[in-house]
Image (cartoon, rainbow, N blue to C red; front, side, top):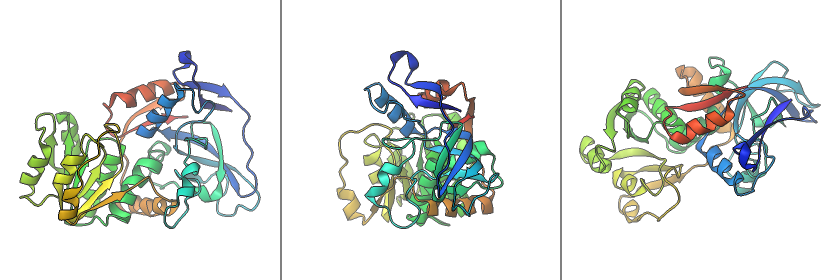
Length: 336
């Protein structure tokens, strides 16, 4: 079979397509014929480490969907032909998070990912792909979808009448927007692109703020909410946005901390958090249990993920390059 590997050869752009042996499932394992894989901001961070001589030989990408191709002994919950999606953390099946789950993140420091024609995983690391979604759409779910669901719904309790602030129009942001619209929550979207804001409006965005035209978007948000603020903030930016998020959160409500899109830098002043009796919910993706609950919701509400662009299996470097531009609206996917 063919599989992409990270490689620090400067002429390879950090990625090499190689012919390797097709893996065989052991007891309790399932082999998946991967049909599509999607990219996340995390994958850019991992690719950048390759230039420093790290992660040579690793198969990248945490997110992938496909069809069960073979099963090992003892597997009863899956059969060849089943449509499945891999969970981001191989070992986090249910219950509270444990630090011991970190090494089981696919496509990272210690675990190969989904950018291969065939992948073997434990049967417990898979969920059924929602029947109304294509493989391309299902491949967008493991990281971005589950992250938004875990933070906003499972732990954040977002529901009808709440107000969500969404930063940007990437994968996690748009899943959050779609969840808010389906739950009856009001959504505030900030972006540097009026075109993207117009598209976000069609997905349920009700208050739209261009942060280039309005750098003090936190003040604009407070004005638009009559001084109340947002009950839920999907904090994706990091140091470049955090202080404004703190000034935007409603009393007694929640900042769901997910990303570091503006990099690692000075720590924000958390004093307002205390005085407003607000919470920060730290989120790194979620469990298979979260994934399964989200899929039920997606099916019930007939929600389709937003796919920005689909690349062929021979266009993976172009897919990474497109994601790096930040011009995408939704998810970037590779079809294998």
